[in-house]
Image 1 (tube, rainbow, N blue to C red):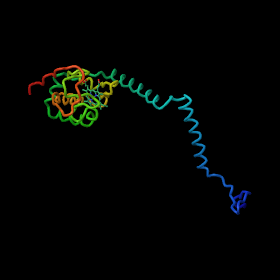
Image 2 (cartoon, rainbow, N blue to C red; image 1 turned 120 degrees about the vertical axis):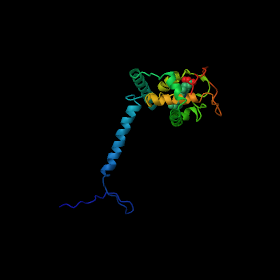
Image 3 (tube, rainbow, N blue to C red; image 1 turned 180 degrees about the vertical axis):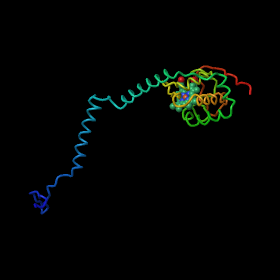
Image 4 (spheres, protein in one colour; image 1 turned 90 degrees about the horizontal axis):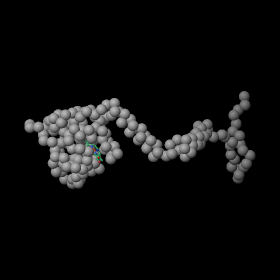
Length: 196
Ligand code: HEC
């Protein structure tokens, strides 16, 4: 049986010699793997086999998401509850509490803790960009204003939760929070709440 022997290379520098051992297989696999990945990556992103850039890929995804959202709303038309139902919510402590909690979690980041306006408009004044009737506010919430940075919430939350948000927003009308964002849009007098 031939014993495995390390092969010593011929050169010898001041008594230091070198073995001719191959690199371990896993290291070679890693090396060739990275070369293959680099070639594919350059081919995909730089040579136009794939999207021109990550931002182009992002924009393409946005187009798909927008079409998907439109298709969703075409198949599930938004029917706001009646004005009476929405306004009655603004007098119902349980509904208001549901709206308040949801607002704090989901909306305050853009509209401010007290809806005084931040990235999004002030929701406590009597001026509205997209309509100030409670049914219009419901539709704005459900469909969003994607082009202006207001996300659609109609797929994330059931109608009852949107209605609770509308009731809460209605209850904040005229609440005069600190540091209000200047009013935007046209004046709409708030619809009167039903008598207790
Ligand atoms: C990512 C930021 C963002 C979040 C989160 C957000 N909004 Fe908005 N919202 C906006 C922007 C920006 C606008 C302004 C749209 C426009 O100019 O038409 C807006 C507009 C609105 C309007 C219409 C205001 C008007 O004058 O017509 C309402 C009502 C509203 N948001 C409520 C909400 C509620 C309730 C939530 C939580 C479920 C929420 N928003 C979450 C950014 C946001």
